[in-house]
Length: 446
Image (cartoon, rainbow, N blue to C red):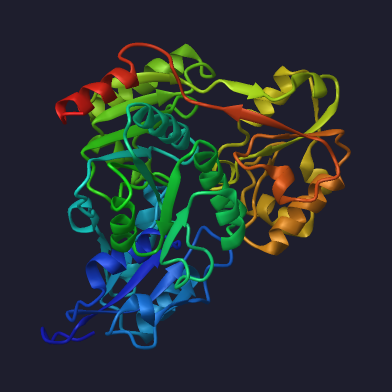
């Protein structure tokens, strides 16, 4: 490693096809004092062994930037004489982050976490950001509710979604989705559909992709206010004028256990304790106390997430296989979700999909052994989608309860009836979120 101050420091960015690219674009693209020798990939299958293309990387990288598996961290540090390892993904325990830091330090490199001041974009429009302590807290429900409320007040809303660029990165530089046909044409994954479809069904236009400066500029051309719909438990890519953070009453101990969820809770303007209708009252109280202890200035809103089956009579007394939201059940750490609760409440006999899991789905269960008798809606590749279809169709179920936000019957050739379980944000006490939002808008002259 060079001690010459005129030699660019050599940087390796640890990522998961999201914040890593954003941090590069904000800090390192066009920066002659640093040379990024590569990205690594984790969390999401099939996103390594690609290239961050030259068209996105800028003039300092005429050949693009390679993307490696994270397991190669030590080899890359040694072979590429890495000076600095940058951690740039989210929804992981604090201990996990420090294990990676220890590996980087043992290899002789520094370890960096880039912060909000250096990575947030400023918008000329008001920005309301919605983040969460963990994946699956109900953040997207709140984002959709918020967007409807803003539209009802006559505002033109652009929703910017946390990135999920799992395909052709150059083609995904700026994405705009206004119809289900747009999703089909883009060939998005099931995980992307889970985030985009409900917004489109609500009448929202969704912006996402890789280059968020360009994405924001495109959104500002057709909106009067921006809603940031965050992913995992990451902090926003945009500088928020109002920052709403969701906590899960079913996970009351996870206020200060994950990165960057604890940081997000500390920076919140409003904290929302969700799923109070499903959690024991003692857990709700304990969660509120923990949140108040680390952020005493933020008002705390109680919210419910009621679940509704489209046709409960078709589930009652029948064998049901439950398909849940993918990321919530996998790296979100939940053994099950709203679908299992809805199926059991309706009187179904739940069929365990482990018994008929196709090889691609068995690998998911092996990677996430905490998953209960439910099927996460994974679909990062055509092979996974085929495995998901086979697992469903080969099961002994009479009916499928689909609690994933996507229209599963549209996406997959399922040979069984599909009953959707839907869940939305609902106020559950004082202060209400709507009163706090309206106060914010009034202060801004709206």
